[in-house]
Length: 419
Image 1 (cartoon, one colour):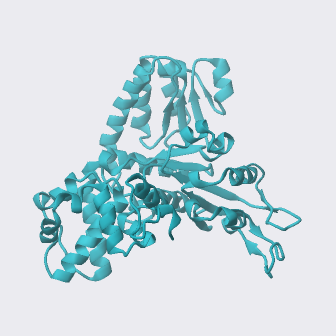
Image 2: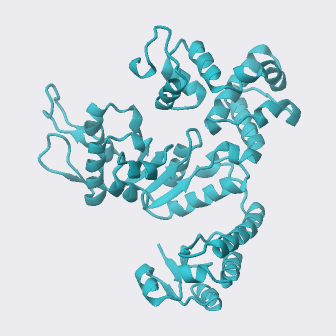
Image 3: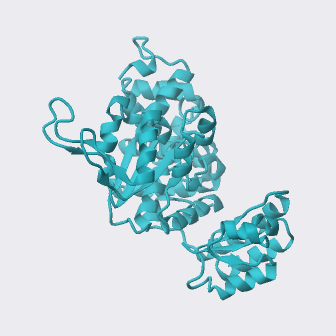
């Protein structure tokens, strides 16, 4: 990866840089042009802290984005960040306007799953493209249902590992007693009754990508062993006398604040920084509400293709309950609610608008979380795996929300004590 660093402090420049440029704004632009940004120049521009505090930053950003709108820019400010933020905002606005004209919304390929036309989702797509150009470990942060696995798969498919394996692992779903064997595998005879060796997910992901969903649920002991793998690129199966070398890129996802967990001592600081070489934050659906109509059209079209139906998307008035709902479960909740509505429409031989109108009863459908969880649990005969899928959340998240709302199964057993 080629990095152009622009800073007028020689010592700081030498500490940061593999590519060096003078910090004068005019010189910075000339250096960027001389480097051939549009052809074989840098993949990333870092604007140093001194330059970030000067008025010339805006001009640098505007000229750089004009010559190469896809070029990622990072500004570092050690003092008052106001000028840097303002310049970045202005340049980002210019970029967003051009991007809407020049960059069509992907309808196929790895990025097609990131549906929407908002600036927020386009910024996510650009971060995915940037991450895919490197082999750095990636941490994807965002609320449940925002599409973290979609992003992980896109990074994998667009990168050089795209022809290798993509191995997803839900860390919350692995019992702690089995986690080490699941990750590292075991040799023949490692346990009583084991007659053959079994590869772990780190072996299965060799020359590919290991996706660790809900990485915050890894036990501290396992975190220490995973850190060793990240550092040494070697895996020793349980019961084996020798280690095996692996080439694995790790893409992690978390719906919790891992930095806060580090400060609380529940997640290893060293592993956090190893996994978060490149970070992507996914905005919740309520922060990109302009994407709701596009997402609804997308899910209805997908349902029609799968079922051979011709359900049409009604107008904004009929969609009002969906457009105004907060969607705490984000895109996954929207997908599941729409699928339920579409099935009802198909079964009743009516339009989507009529089904939405029938079910617009407030709390029972789109409102109070406790009422909604109880209804879905009842519909699924208190099978939490199916209920979690219907709600568009993980089983662990459902456990947490049941505990928060004091919900117990009909036998009075707490959520975490039932299967």
